[in-house]
Structure formats: C-alpha cells, structure tokens
Length: 461
Image 1 (tube, helix red, strand yellow):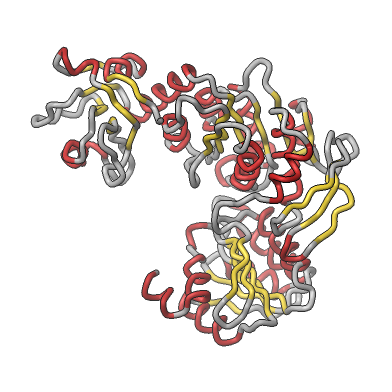
Image 2 (image 1 turned 180 degrees about the vertical axis):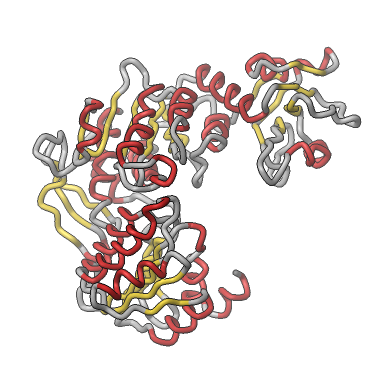
C-alpha cells in the first residue's frame, strides 16, 4: 500500500497550515497525485506550478475525481467551493519533497540509489531482477527520476517494502544532493560519467561533482559502488569498483558474445560464470554493478546467476525487433549521449556478423556549446565501425552527417520521419540490421513502430 496518513500528518510534515473542520483533520489520505488525469480516489492532490502550467487551475477536477485533501500554495486565493481539508504551504513542490522525506524516514526499507550519465535505468532493472524474488522490492517506474519523480516514487512505496531501488537523474548541480537527502540511501551506485548535461555543468569534472552528490544522503554505514574505470571517481574512495582496471574489485572476464542472445562472462571476484541476455558490451558493467548490490543483500552466486538470466528491461533500450520487410532493428530510441551512442555503434558492429549494418542516428541533447564537436565525432566514429549505411535525422544529426562525410563515407540525411520510414521500409530486408538511436526529443520510436507494424502503426501512432 502507498502512503496512508492523516491530513493532520501531511500538514505537520510539510510545515503547512491545515484548513479543515475538526472532524476532517484526521481524514485518511491514501496516495499522492500531481496530475488530475491519473488521480485516484482518496489521493491528496498536489498542484504544482510550472513555466507553462499551474496545477491550481485543475482543483475542481481533483475534487470531482475524489481527492481526500489538497495542498495549496500560499498567495493563491483559496478555492471557494472546496469542502475538503486544505493544507496551505509556502511552495507545493517543496512540500511534496518534505512529505516524501518524512515518509521515507518512517519506513524500515533499505534504499538503493542509482545515478550516472548512462545506464541508470538498465542497472535499476537488473538490480530489481536480482532482488525481487527474495525481497519485497519497489523500484522507480519509467523515468520518474527527478525532483518531482523521486518524491512520488518514495510516496508510492508500500509500507512493507524491504528494498527500494530509486533512480536519480539531474540536469543541474544540487539536484542529486537533494534527492539523496530525501531518499537517505543505504547503497549508492554511480554507473559512469559521460557527457550528458555538460551544457549545464561545463565539464566532465562538473558532471562528476554533481553525480557524487549522491553520497550526501548516504547512510553512515552505507556502501558506495561505482564504475572503477572512471578516474574522476577514484578520489571519492568507493567501497566497490566494477570495471576492467586491475584495481577493480570485480571485472567481467572471459567474455564471449552470443550475438543477439547477449554474452557469457565470468566474475573476477568469485569466479562465477554468468549469462547476460542483453545486447551491448557496455551492459556487462551494468550487470556487475547490480550483482555487487545483490551480494550486499546476501543473494547467493547461484541465485545471482539464475536471476540475471531472466532479466527484463524497460522499453526502447536496445530492444531487438523485426520490421515487416524482415530487417532486424535495434531500438535504442529512449535517449542518447555521446557515450551511449558509441556503445550502441560498438554493438551494431559486433552483432549479426553476416548482415549489413545500417545506423539511423539523430540529435544528442544537453551537450551545450560542445554539441557540434560531439556530433561530428560520432560521425567519424561510425567510419571505423564498418557500418554499411549511415542515415541521419534532426537538426543536430546534420553534424553527424558532416563528420562522417569528412571521414570518407556518404551518409543520407532524412528531412522527416516520413522520408525515413519510406526509404528504410523500401530498401531494408532480412539481410540488414538497423540501429535507431537519438535523444527523446526526436521520438524515433515512431519510425520503429511504423517499420514493424506498417500502416497499422501509422493509424495507431
């Protein structure tokens, strides 16, 4: 069961003023909603204020759908028709975070917090797969990993949860620190340091400093696990390092690619042989990070091996699909950074050795004034990977096109998704494997859906 507390408790923990009849002060609230479209009966409605929206405008819908109480930002006139308990607070977002912090403090759950430039969601899913057969596990749903998503994740945690797995994302300095202090993790994991959000943080050193904020809320006896191949993390003195460097506590040894079926490898730490049914060599380290967490919770090597074989990931992360023309598609359209795009190209070069390799690459967001440099570098990187055809899309995709062209190949830039669908549907066949990757803003999953489903995908998309 999600959070279940009285209106009085919510007011106290948010430093709010409770406006309610005496009998309503102890009205029970079950669950939290910031969106009237998904609000459930007896939720407390939290109207957030953004640049282009104001949740206070939707209070009538919240009342109609059965909200049990409402948070209300001061300086807004109180709703005249509301008979529900109203908790007037200085700032509704901050109040949401304060309530989540208090709820977390009342739970007995152990918390695993995961951040990093790439691989957060995959590592979260791997960790959950390893732990959930032995423990009652609650994990971040979708990408609810920011200053709004993390408190909602904590507040949706059943009271009998034994382990919470909380993904933490950020754009700016200070955000991970806030989330870490809110979740108070027992284990902190940093998957890697890439170039994501360099637009806001200035350098990889700036990104590292921001990611290391995850330690600010770590329990005194907490464990810090990280990418041991990243020298910028070494000064933070991690307890467990995973990677290929000799000083790492665990490394993947005797790696063998099984093509579309993933990899087999051996753990340096214990000698256990594992089967990882995921595409992408970079996922070997993500798997070992999850295994390291599992060992902290006394999961045996036999259980680790069994659970890793059965892992299931969130969508659009190296999904292998088949187009209606027979072409194999690696759907990695969920997001992109320079690091993850290079890793996806490494995978494309390695998988299905007897097929033609095609790549459809698009914009990488949030890399700031170095954007042109990184996009051109990706274009050059393609050339060394034996890719037969490169297609680009999006305004920044033109820089990938230019980088590849300067390195000696002739890519094709699509002006629209419709053009991409038409040409790839016409030219692709069972002898082709196509990688599709870009940042979320391009929504390239639409292209994948149409290639797989044809006209049906068009009608439903």
